[in-house]
Length: 546
Ligand SMILES: O=P(O)(O)OC[C@H]1O[C@H](O)[C@H](O)[C@@H](O)[C@@H]1O
Image (cartoon, rainbow, N blue to C red):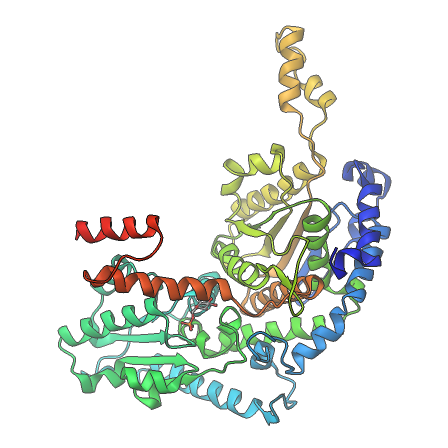
């Protein structure tokens, strides 16, 4: 047993899970009219109703005891204080500093990082305004109308998905296109429709060494030069965001066109840094700043709310409850808002890259499940496909439903239908349908008794399936900022409980290294095929097909 699974809080939760046994949420709701109010809380424009979970006061008490035992609050404070919490990479983790509006100093290695953060934000604001008001022009004097944002992973998902989620707040007259995939089809498709004289390329790469991003930028540069621009004109059309200013200048980006970021900002937490430049271009600086402010508000909630009323802590503990004590292996996110449809993919990187780990503390192999598979897509579409498995499959899949109470340009009928589907699903998952109910529904259908019994068995739904419902007053930039920070902190709390480092990604790094080795063998026909038999054969097949 590891320290965690042998611990009193863990053992107590195992007992609680046995006690809960087959008790049904349907009965709890019937017995406790106050249940919904008791297990709900609101802050930062977000209401979390977690009453449709397999919990009672005793379970919650044990979960909070686990959080205390695992020193969640002192780990949280260490992160906010700039301590080296990413111990395998020897780095502080301070994405929260990028959205800190307190005016306090924040120290990393004896130096206050706030002046350089503010200075970069001033530069972003000036640049965005110059693009929007037309003072920054292309080399032929045309205003910039198209932005091609090139980056991958955290240098892509945040900017793209947050821009998409805030479509009602878009700045008119400027299009922003996102390219991540190294598959040439993507960049070719995007560039094909553009006029190079009015196009700005934003190259985003924290490391400035990611193959996909470097290649896509080279292709964009080549396109720009072939279209009539010269080397000298590149300065007006290419900017970069990177913590590796040296590599960016060597690549040919003018130093004045490089927006810095820092090694204490993890890739999947980087949208709050200059990596968010495409968001500011898409929305205008004011809305971009509101996004940061919303995240700051959630930071304040996370830092100050008692554990029992702390939204990220509660969501994290519920996840631990199902992952570790009910064997749930995945968690589904269901945004009932078209513009938020990319959010599951965003949380997928955030959560799976952070908590997909198997070593606790310094070097202890875990004997418990860590991060779940995160998946999902926009409601109501899923109701007509994969929800079936959530209702009647053999696996337990906790769900987060999300709905804005008001949407821009609201069509009352559509919005009522959307809400009714969202609420109806959470209700169906919770209450299910008993055999007796299914049997009764089949009366007067002209069925034989045998057929009626058989059909009723198939139509029976166990229910007791857990879900959270997150309601937003409206999904404006501020609330979206709070929502993203809510999930960031949820992931942090789970990592703290599992005692893992949520801030490295060695598995991903290995993929990058091996990918480059294989590329060398693909491009160099003389290179020895000395890898495993399968990979050698695949490379050979590819070589022969070229
Ligand atoms: O920004 P870059 O250095 O180009 O990195 C892009 C991405 O690379 C890796 O895949 C990391 O796992 C991601 O977290 C990161 O966001």
